[in-house]
Length: 119
Image (tube, rainbow, N blue to C red):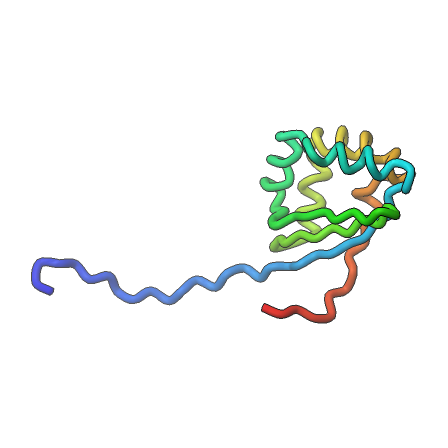
C-alpha cells in the first residue's frame, strides 16, 4: 500500500529448548498435613526467587502416604538449581523444609527420566 511501511519478513527466532523435570521425594508421613499447610502460603520472596532462577510451570503433588512428586519446566535445570543455591531465601526455606524429609530436599531430589511426552 502506498504511504505505508512494510516490515521485511524476519525469520522467527527459535525458542530455547524447554526441559521438563519431574522428581520424587518422600515426606515423612506424620508430617504430610503440616507440609501441605506450609505450601498453602509459600513466601512471596521464595516464589520470586524461583521465577527469577528460571523455574516455570512448577507444581508439587503429595499423596496421602507422603510421596511427593514435583514437576517444573526450565531452559537449564542445573543453572536453575545453581541460581537458587545462591539465594538467601532458598537457604532459609530448605532449612525449614528439612524436618519434613530428614534431609535437605533441594540436595536430595534427582530428576526422573522422561520416557514419553504428548504435546
